[in-house]
Image (spheres, rainbow, N blue to C red):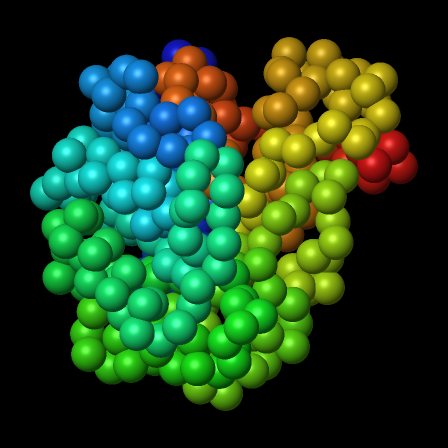
Amino acid sequence: MASSNGSTATAAGELTLGGDMTVRRMGYGAMRITGDGIWGEPEDRDGAIAVVRRVAELGVNFIDTADSYGPDVSEQLIAEALHPYPDDMVVATKGGLTRPGPGHWQPDCHPKRLKKCCEGSLKRLKLDTIDLYQLHTPDPNVPFEESVGALAELRDEGKIRHVGLSNVGRSHIDAAQAIVPVVSVQNRYSLTARDSEEVLKKCQEEGLAFIPWFPLDAGGIAKDAIEDVAKSHSATPMQVALAWLLAHSPAMLPIPGTSSIAHLEENVDAAALELGEGDLAKLEEAA
């Protein structure tokens, strides 16, 4: 089923994770289907479930979540909406952050806790194996290698199919790869927040997927430039921001999140938006 403008996620093309798991390059981030402050139940539970079901209808087959979203709520809603999952659906989740309260996040990546987090995610998502399990962040109080080692053990036990990292630098990738194969990196990245450019390059070099979180953070770009490009394509500025990500690197797997079906459809429509060389040059100059 297509969006209101006839687009589906297939227009974004595909990439392969770990050599055996192919997904479309327009994903969905399921953080915002929870309550305010990414805390508790959403005001409209039925509406949140409808959004997740619409994700699958639009051909999106990569959903990113975490045990800390709610906490637990996002994973529960995904399972309620989609289980039993479509054969090609990849639900990726993360562990390593605790939630003292709304809007607050603290790392806890002790190996025993990460294993407990993974067990909880398996139950909430109703899975025997999580296709992609990501370390949510390095923990300054725990040796990074110990945290990654816990994920390696979970992989050996068959509870994780593939391992990913989040909020890391190039050296973290090297350290993790010495312990277990890594298939993806999820860092903050957008047209105007490009501190992770070197990490993206490393992902391209090593065949890893790069999953930009907060991909619609285009606030720093010159307003006239992005609006000019958007108008020339009868698109929105946020669609241009997503289309730029897809054009910028074949390793890119954007996961824009929303709790609105209309906004979801608008994001998926960006998969079919082709920016010309002049558009890309204008955006680069203004960023």
